Amino acid sequence: MKAVYISLIFILLNGCAIGNTPFAERMDYKIGTKVLFLDPTRYGDYGDLIRADYLISGKGFTHISKNENGDIVQHWFYSEVLPTHSMKEWVGKCKIIYVVDPKTNIIKGWDYDKDANPESCRDWL
Image 1 (cartoon, rainbow, N blue to C red):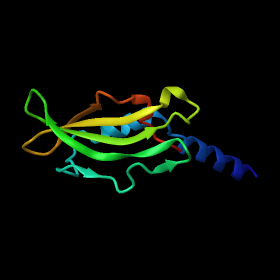
Image 2: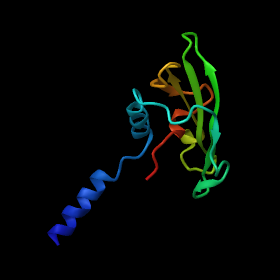
Image 3: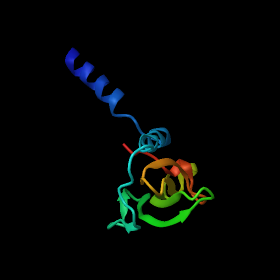
């Protein structure tokens, strides 16, 4: 019985990385790595419900722009939390940008896109 309790505690401690903070930390780990896509691409399940009745899939890599330093800016639309979710502050679009070095294709940084709700960018359990 003691082993069951220890296993349950271990699972709870390791499996509860949900929310906006783990999402942001995961994005931070991508800094310094090469981008996987150079051209816009759409998710195959765009617009489909991907979690119960409150989360739909985003469009994917939507477009490219350049910033004032000449860096490539990749615009990504990951998902959208619908108003049917009980946590109203999470409602909105999860949209981010990657700032990419045009010579090496290395991610220099990331941020939330201008019309995104950072709280809708979450790791879901």
